[in-house]
Amino acid sequence: MEIKELEAIVEAILFTMGEAVEVERIAAATEQDEDTVRRIIRNMMDRYEEANRGIQIIELNGAFQMCTKASMYEYLVKIAHVPKKHVLTDVLLETLSIVAYKQPITKQEIEAIRGVKSDHAVNKLIEYNLVCEVGRLDAPGRPILFATTEEFLRSFGIASLEDLPVVNPEKVEDFKLEAEEEIQLTLDIQP
Image (cartoon, rainbow, N blue to C red; front, top):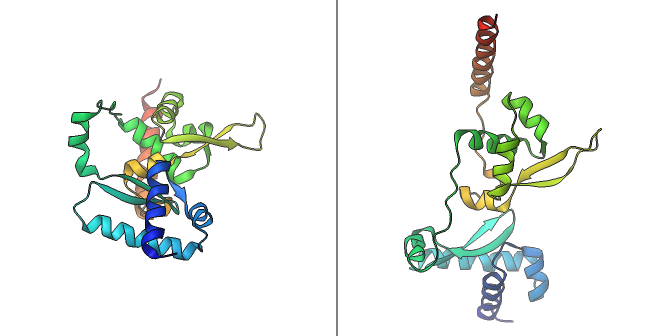
């Protein structure tokens, strides 16, 4: 099979699926090895990026998806209904950060880190499709485990969780000290 034909097949698969497709599935469909498929897709990604095109191919956790370039959004909203914009408050961002760095994680673990109930925040993140249930912890009560979704990766423009910024250990210690000081102030104020 020629490269141009393989590219056309890959393009058709990604366009039709409308969601991220694993390399293994594309390789099986095209009867090619995964390295060949990966090389073809990366070449296509480069060409889409270089050309003045309205679409691009992005990588999400080793899978690939065809989507519209962000710079085209303003033109799309003139044609389509404007999607409801989700507002990520500080509480939602804090909760989402905890899930992203500690996943899979239970709601009780999130609340232990935040120090407050997190039902509303977790439910909103599920509604926004940034967090999802991924199973249950093998413990009494079998609490639900939460993790981030592909939509989380897309929304924040990262290919995988390995691309999350590394938290500086010194900053973590500073945050712990600040939290301990706040707790002590709260205890000192209470009668």
